[in-house]
Length: 561
Figure 1 (cartoon, rainbow, N blue to C red):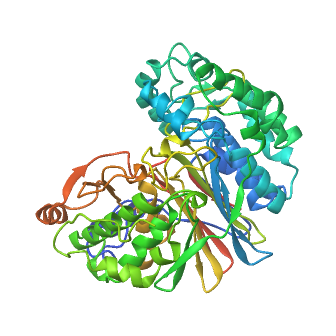
Figure 2: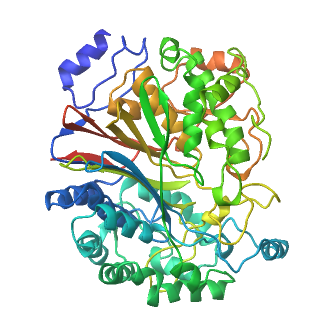
Figure 3: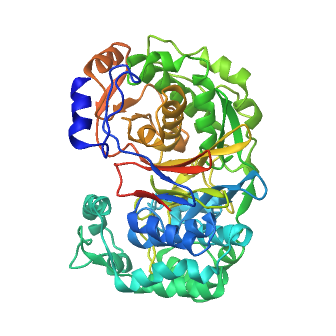
């Protein structure tokens, strides 16, 4: 403890260490939360955060600022998100004093039947990448829906900063450059000339500090700024998408684009130790968070101490139990029965909790009979509106398909389908696939408390549950909750409808050897690895003051005014 006190005395409080007393001997590096009264933004890129704050200062709403930040991230972090992808959001409306949920995910092509998809696969094609993986991009429709309901500034004003950056260039940040370098060998092997024309310079991705310009994207955003959704879903852009896919053997049509519609949905919640935790209903995986914490609520997590073998074991087992239900029951609710009330009931959670052996790692079945790459951001404004927004292309650079001259890559969300007949997530035309991206929100006594999210494919529900435990069970502040070492359990891909089994438990650096040794004795297969633990942003409101957090694993920043 003396060493920690000496660190603070010598170097100040810009990089605090967590109190050993509170975490029973465990410590890790963190930094201060950002505090402000009039507005707050937290994104995974400093310039996106600055754009959001500028929009707020101009009188824009939190929703306006989020749209502007999201547009910029499609330029500056193009492997993770963009207008060729989908979007989900949870909005706290100060005027209505309630939460609104938006599902802006697109559907599969109406003209591609299940039988035809089978034939395509038998002929050696795949729906993990390429033209068969592409579903209708929902992002722009999501922006339009959010702006129509909650926007204050002109839509063109929200896209203007990104248009300017796209023409002048934006420096490639450290994390973006690292991802480019990791993905480069794979991309070089593909036959996608329009992709390489857009993103490569001298046969490689731009490096850290290089200026990246995208004049094609600037032109496309100008069209959207001028014409709204018509600028994307009809006319030059829509024709460019469809013509490109026809050449490549894809099936998305002008009618698919024109008929796309986002859905306003009611967020769903469970209460965890006095706090209401909110997620969106399927076709996403958000309710698995609620299933995990429902199971954990029956254990005294706080007494287990952060980082202990008991803490890690009980979390991992609860995750495995919940993910078995995810693999069986989550999908587009229009194409199957999802027993949502049952899955989220305290009674069902109590039944599932009994399966967990406190001393041994287990393998589980679904509890009922049958009946990737992302950005996350959050913004709050002076009127009390808050938005939790997540947007993605699925895999890095999605399908790798770039329509010539449009400046963006199309998502590969169709890879979330399964070809198992009768499964709720079986491929079908005009259907929304299973989605990994999930925004989250916490309320307390009917009032807004925390807007947060954590990007990273299958890590997202696990990360959400860990953030909730860190805040509520372990008493961490908003920044500490995101900086604490994380746990990631990997089975055999719940999103594809296959069994989890015992799987592997990956631990970020910061957990001690004693805990790791005990976990191995319990039967956990422990792995140590970097880069799979997600990225967190959050805003909390307390006594009319906003607190912002943005973790050190990403290039991001929280800022307010």
